[in-house]
Length: 117
Image 1: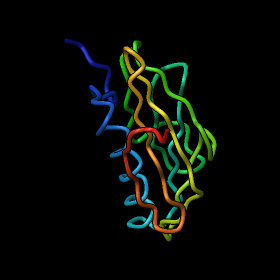
Image 2: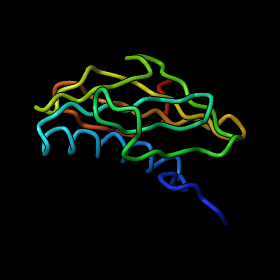
Image 3: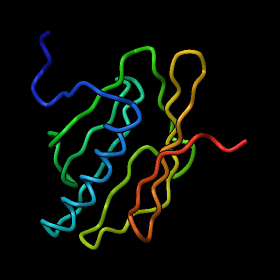
Image 4: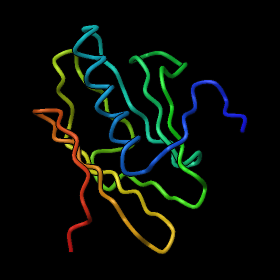
């Protein structure tokens, strides 16, 4: 299987949240803003330094998955202190199964949960 450089196979419940956690870690460690951009056309997300064109890491979902930013927008930028705005991203898989990725702004904590009724 040929995978383009910088693109990783994805498990929806782990890789997208890990990309967000890594962005926070990179921002704090290197003391520079790091952003994660949700790319709904490519079914994935890219981690990059603020202002950079090339991603440090990109994860992609298979086409049968759908991504959407339910709140907080499609771009999250972690400050050098690890702060970010609150956000909820939704991953919808085959058969309508949904997962919610929540980012808590003050702590930078990333959690995965079933959608609230």
